[in-house]
Amino acid sequence: MNPSPGPVRGSLTDPHRTSGSTALLHVHLKPAAEEAVRTGHPWVFDQGIRKQNRPGTAGELAALYDRRNRFLGLGLYDPHSPLRVRLLHQGTPVRVDDAWWRERLQKAATRRAALFDSQTTGYRLVHGESDGWPGLVLDRYGPVLVLKLYTTAWLPWLESLQSWITGLFHPRNLVLRLSRNIQSLAAQRGAPADGTVLHGPPLDQPVPFLESGLTFEADVLRGQKTGFFLDQRENRRKVESLAAGRAVLNLFSYSGGFSIYAARGGAVSVTDLDLNPHALEAARHHFALNRPQFPNPRTTHHTIRADAFEWLNRAPAASHDLVVVDPPALARQAAERTAALRAYRHLVRQAARLVRAGGILVACSCTAHLRPAEFFELVRETLRHTRTRWRELCLTTQPPDHPAAFPEAEYLKAIYLQAANQPAKP
Ligand code: SAH
Image 1: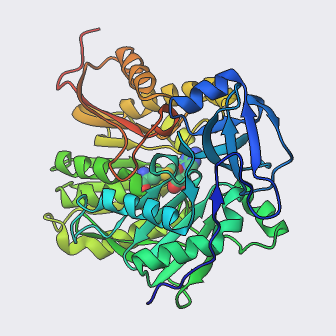
Image 2: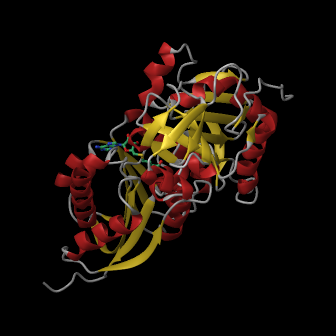
């Protein structure tokens, strides 16, 4: 496939120049927002704006200025979100042209070049703000790339994005995914819908790919995120290394990723629990696909379709040797934090109850509104009130293909603890 030259959406950020017939959008910031931008933070909220020269449209480039009218940076304007400008560049003026964008994409690719061998063909190529592409991710599943947009600001850039991506990576397919909150806005603007194949032949089957030599399939058109939770790869590898001889329970399993690694690590049984029947069907399929790699041919696989919170309340105690708890984000907004903290404490307490003496608990959180240190402390504090003594094995955060360049981007964290062989004396 040859890269086709796409339309060029260039702009000068020199304040004295204009872009086309309309004056470049100038956004003047309040002191706190100005300070945040100067220190490299990529978000400007609506309340951080002091004035602007005119209303902006979705996806326009906005030049940011400080209180003394000095140029601060350049961002993508989004009138539909309180997160009004997402920074693309901070510092002195730059010319944003096709070559600039292509170089930025190349940089993200170069950053991953040494991370994976041929046994891992599914990973994140572009991770939003932290790769200089705010509100946008690009995932690879073998020959298929999935572009996911979290802001309408990228919709006017779709043709260019397609040209840059296919020009650099030459994928067989490029699929577009839209986060739920922008789907109706996208439809109103006549943009391609969530799940549109932007490039390549029709795609009606899940896409197979390798992760650490294991075969998985991603439902790139309809699955959660872009079809798979690529961010848990390193935790899965760790679980594999801890699983030998253990009965493993995988709570919030999705398509069974943790269980497949545990089975290859020699688990005696793996149990996937999820609310979503399609996820469990995929988990059964993944187990069958990878069975030849399991050292113990008698490893059993069970699936339970249930609400994990309800199921845990009635599950028998001390039933498993390794329990993974990986719930969805429990707070989508800061206001939901208190409820989320309560839910995490409850989950950790209940999951810990199922762990046998000498067993392991792996507690994960993908809630961005909960900092890693807070989550780790929450888990430790919760376990202090159990009758078991727990030994901390390790802590993990973001995987290398999901870098975090600012605090809010550090959403993923996990803590591994082992229960003492004997229950603590009361
Ligand atoms: N551990 C998974 C990713 C988990 S994502 C992996 O490695 O791939 C969170 C999962 O929780 C989703 O599959 C979702 O369907 C499921 N889920 C959400 N709420 C749930 C609930 N109350 N009970 C059980 N599963 C739930």
